[in-house]
Amino acid sequence: MKHADQSDMTGTYVKVIALEVAILAALWIFGRMFS
Amino acid sequence: MRPFDWLVVVVYLVWIVYDGLRRSKGTDKVDGYFLANRSLPWWAVGLSVMATQMSAVTIVGTTGQAYLTGLRFIQFYLGLPLAMIILSLTVVPFFTRAKVYTAYEYLERRFDVRTRSLASFLFLMGRASALGVTLAAPAVVMSTILGWSLPVTVFAICVPMIFYTTIGGVQAVAWTDVKQMFIVVFGMSAAVVILLMGIFQHATFTQALHLAGATGRLQAIDFRFDLRETYTFWSGMIGGLFLMLSYFGCDQSQVQRYLTAKSIDEARQSLMMSAFVKIPLQLLILTTGVLVFVFYLFQAPPMLFNRAYDARVARSAQAPAYAALQHDFDAEIATRGAAAGRSDRTAFLESDARVKDIRAKAVGVVKEATGDERYNDVNYVFPTFITTQMPVGLVGLMIAAIFAAAMSASGGELNALATATVIDFYRRHFVTKATDSHYLMVSKAATMGWGLFACVVAMYAANQGSLIEVVNRYGSFFYGSLLGVFVLAIMTKRATARGAFYGLITGMVVVLIVAFTTPIAFLWHNLIGTVVVVVAGMAISMFEAPAPARSV
Image 1 (tube, helix red, strand yellow):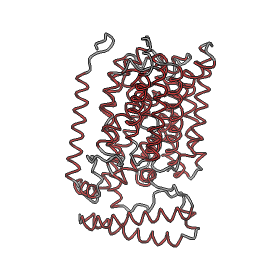
Image 2: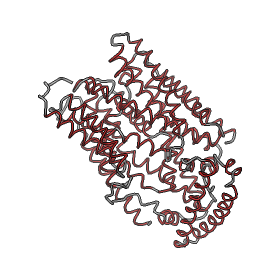
Image 3: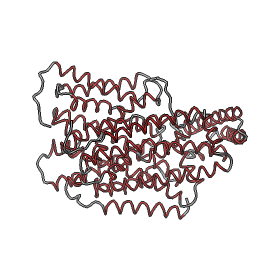
Image 4: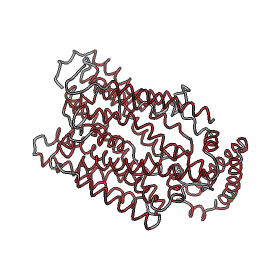
């Protein structure tokens, strides 16, 4: 639902998810490389 | 601690208190005292949100845990970014538009006063207990360093914190939090640099990573689905998501942070700051703990980091056994260091296992000699490194950071406890029509009262295993159920007041039964609590006529 007192933050949410996926992938690869 | 370190600690703490009070303008009314007149910028609210969650427990307990077990604790935070997005879309606009002081006020508007009072009561009990633990962490550190008794140390931390929180209200808390975040990030970064400089004298970066990795300390992500395992990808993503939703959406100590923001957008941006920064920040802290482990492969560590009982053990009948273990430990540390230096993986792992075994036996001897069955040294690892390995000035800064972290995190919680006490109970049930100045006076008295209560709890919480887990376990007893009742309130129109109230009680009872009778790890308790409250609440509601629509 759209409200006048709040703006669309979809782009920010996508960036948050992308960052988490990147961190998860990096940690997983890192753990495999140095185990 | 040298005199210059003491000077750094004292100057920093005086500045924190002075600046907190200086910024507390406009707190002569209840709205200013509890909500900063809804005037704070998003970045200050965002830093305050993170500072309230990242207490001294995080610095002391998390580094200790990473030293012993590695990066796997990061999984606890995996649900946080998604939780922040969900909250930004749901409760943040809801609470901000509703112009409430507490999250629980909304429950009365949607259901009834008893559901509001029960939810607020659960928050008060859980948060007051956790607040004691939050204060205990730095007390443990300082009592070890200074040789002070625990009560004296607890009061040394509490008195300034209670002082500026009581007088300055939420503004003093928020601006103190902002400073704390900067000092903590700077201090932890400095610790990482010192650790790397020490490690590079004996090993390359790649060798260091292989050594940490060989012991499993770099295995951050565990994809096994095992309900008994505390930290896995699934417990973090699912159980952790529900915990974070509940903590940031239903816990007044967090809700109150973003209620101080200028607008809905600023409140949402403050949560997005956590969504972006929290996991990298936790990784920095956990990495510090892992680096402390690698550092002590090349520098002899103490056999046990908690030296509180050294004298007692030396005087006890177990003294010869302890001395023999110390002898074995010294020899094994030399063997492990040599194996690490020549990158002999097999010899290194065998020696590391023997070091672990000797440490476990030493803990057993201390327990036998002192009768303290809760003895452990998890929370002493990083403080020991700070005070024995860091250069003059930085030692003072790190100790100041731990002190300030305890004070600012506790200040936020104290302010929230006072808000819930006054708004949800005193003003709602006891003195319903009084002047603003009367409520302000009662609010300050409540802040001081909760502060003193927390001090007493802190003295008993100091030795309860890994402190970070103690805090999270306390929370998981009631967080999921609280989230469940907010889901009923916000997401459903059919739920009735009776359904919400008895659903909440059912959720609490089920979580307690699960916690005490099954091996299910505590992060899952949040999911269980939420689901049970929603299912039970809806089932009870179905036996009643739908409530008439209300404006909330």
